Image (cartoon, rainbow, N blue to C red; front, side, top):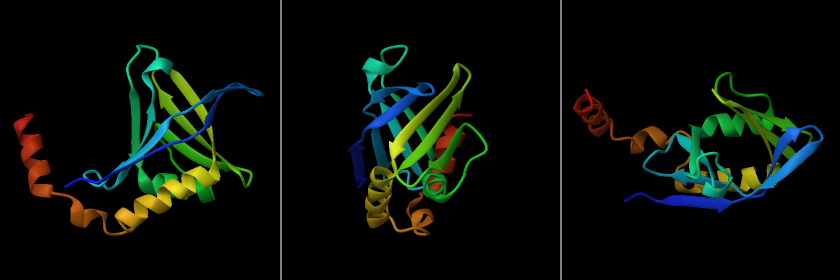
Length: 137
């Protein structure tokens, strides 16, 4: 049975420094997908009026709290001691979000209580994953 952690947090969308727009996305972790975390944006702030979720590696988020991490669509880096910046790159542009580092650390701590670091692969159902891939072919 899947367990889910969802935490609504405060963030700032950096429009043009120093301008920022406050946001309240949710951070989500699901034991059915133990390698990933998600940032979920409410429907009222998306371009098409639908909830938008960005999934990326839980390890990437943890690494980004300590130093620059990520080379692709998601990049994470500290911004001083109290803030962490998450950049989301898409075809439409780049969203730069600023979070309180303490909020991200608390979320990660709770996710590690559900699934300790290194134990993620034991939860993955590789046979089902391969079967799902083959059904889609």
